[in-house]
Length: 315
Image (tube, rainbow, N blue to C red; front, top):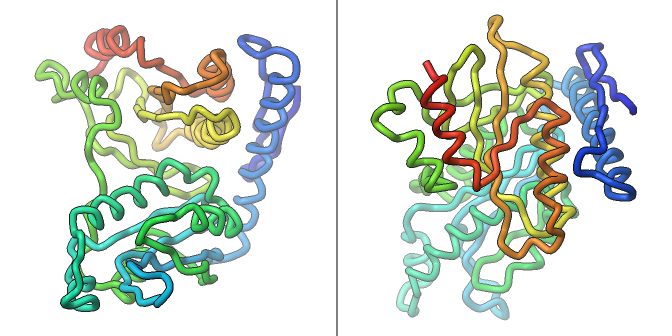
């Protein structure tokens, strides 16, 4: 039905079938697929022509009284639209806050929860934070004692390393360790079964071809190909869910088309939707989109069957 040109010179085909997609929904998702393929090409060409990409950083601050605008730096956020990177890093402790607001009552439990919340929000809403404007809109939603400074531009060579450098320079101290708890407890129980654990790669990281950005998955296993298992919680709102599906679809297609050292790779998305999903067919439509890009989808109610399959095939 259409195609986009990938940086390798090959054609990235978008041949959506009508399975689970009808009428306007089909057209809308098809257009989104084409845009995703074109973005891959654009990003690749830009990265070919520059050693560093443009990024934007914001300082995360604790400000208990906005009328006085006295604030203590407690974290940083880095956005790199060209490579699809956005992440927040906050301090593990509250020493800076204690020093800055010495003698004032401080609710450390609430501050800890707020820091954890903002890191999680950035992770969940990453697809709506892919522009400086999106980042500003996100800042405007912060209504508690945690605020973010307006984004400032910077040159970025290695997003993760530059984020850590920003944290050391602007905040200091120990950063909160990255979250490692299970996204889907039932799935985690499957891969940690004694009979299967020795055949599973935990917290496995691969480099997405062309985009040259890392993808970390909590589980991977081999059964002739390297299967990368990624839990994904999709939003109830259709545009956000579709946007997340488009990102995963482009990543899965690139992994499929570019074997590493002769080994084929396959992205498997274990999908969970928020219970307030309005469009009852949204999970099926998201699954159809991912399937067209060689991404396998395992629904939440299919985890047990998936577990039996992995136990039988993994080696």
